Amino acid sequence: MKMKTRFLLGILLLSVCGLTGCSDAGNENTNNVIPFNLNKTSYEVRLKYVGTQIPITNGSGDFSVSAADETMVEAKIIQNEGANTYIFIEGKQKGKTTLNVTDNVTGDMKTVEVKVTDCYLAYAIAESNHPILKTGMVLFLVNNQARDYYLFVKDNIHGQLYNQPLVKGSYEFFVTIDSDTDPSSQLYYIPNLRLTYPSNEDGNLTDSSTATTAHDFQIELWGENASSSYALQAVQNYLGIDWKELTDNSQTKSPSPIDMKMVMTVPDTEYEITGLVSTASIPEGVLD
Image (cartoon, rainbow, N blue to C red; front, side):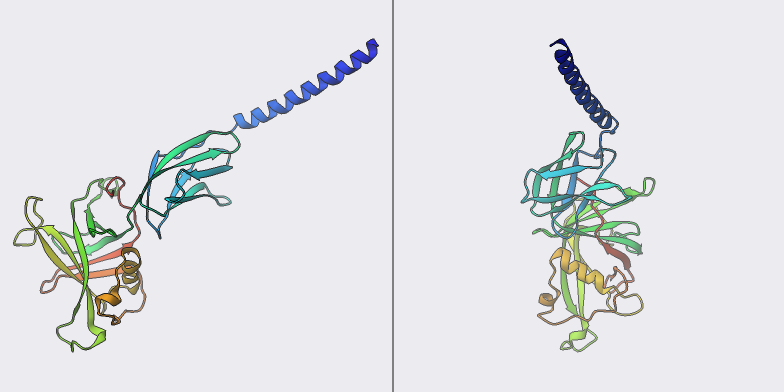
């Protein structure tokens, strides 16, 4: 009887030791994982077309993400072999929501706030002799009802845009017909961009107490320094500009695709602005 009792106790002891060993191994694996980090507690993403990447540093590499409001954003984990893991979010509806990110191995969880803004497009000025739209500045055109724009100056010391815009105004795209050609020709409809900002008689920027005036810029389509058709297509897609409607259902002439360059001139002046249309991000906290 004693032998049997000792035998059973031995089996029980081995079982307990085995379970404890497995538990210790599991805890050891978990303890070796460095807690993950998302760098920031809030992010912005624009509606449609352009998503935002949230990099994940450290952690186990096995993550899951869920949105508090899936009608507002779509989020998924992207894990490329040999590359960092990140969360890719796309805006579906304007507003604010949160994301819960979980390390499935350690159980560590973090929550970040996501704000979905209106869609917008950036125009980075590469070369200019204009008194307001100067080289190095970035013009952001927002696809909202007010047709807002923001002009930002670059901080050359830190290599990034200042957090607040130099000027905010409204914009409008419209089409004119080249006065030197037959108005019935469909090949000479010219797209234009109109910006409103306070300025003096010389066209220089003044403070906000001055009444805003409209300033027209002609988008060059022909010649050696012509704008790219890709740039005009981006304006149509991201800003909802219907070139066909603006030309009374007539086709505009498009140059051969080159890049995203857009060249603007001020009629009856020597001002010329050359820039690149892009999906660069506006500093956070500016848009509603």
